[in-house]
Image 1: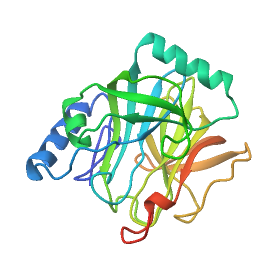
Image 2: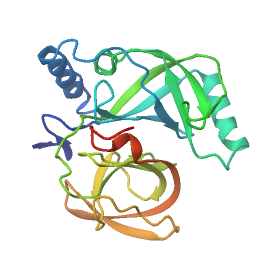
Image 3: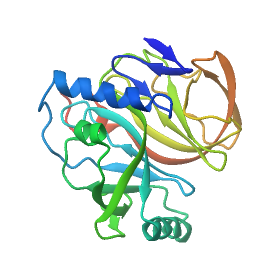
Image 4: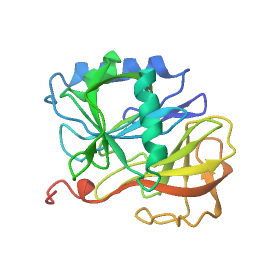
Length: 248
């Protein structure tokens, strides 16, 4: 594993900022060249969240074509972003929103930074969620994180990727190998730059206590403490990340 500009870079795991964005595109391109047509087009559902900036987290599994953990910053049309923010304000009791995009090959979409269309849902689009939009255009503004699954970057540590800006912040559990879990939490942090990867003192499968207390975590690259406040769970999934031979 190499470190560049304080962020993780390896042959499988990429934590991306503006300085490493070009490397991200080149890395995905190389992966596609080595494994052409490995994946078939599919509906890649994503959690969508945020108000000041709009983020998406791919809902992964450990089998093709969904074996990727991906975190994106998205760009919506002004009217669609306003509608999504209004929806969140009207339904504060609902933490989970998802998008059901048209079918595509996920690495190819990321490689070409293509726009796509998707329907926005309140709740999980495959589990009784309510559609709250027609098919709307969505652009990829930035690839924050990309990793094929499984990978051993996180080993047995309980790691989270912190993303956001000065106005709102989120923690996304870094998925490693089966069995694992997908977990996205709204947090509060005084950090100035994102994304960063932190590790907790918990076991690999132990969840944080969402009691509003502040907790000191350990930042990986710069070997320093990071204080965050766990606020609100947006998504938690175990079943989709069982061992590949388990039933889903």
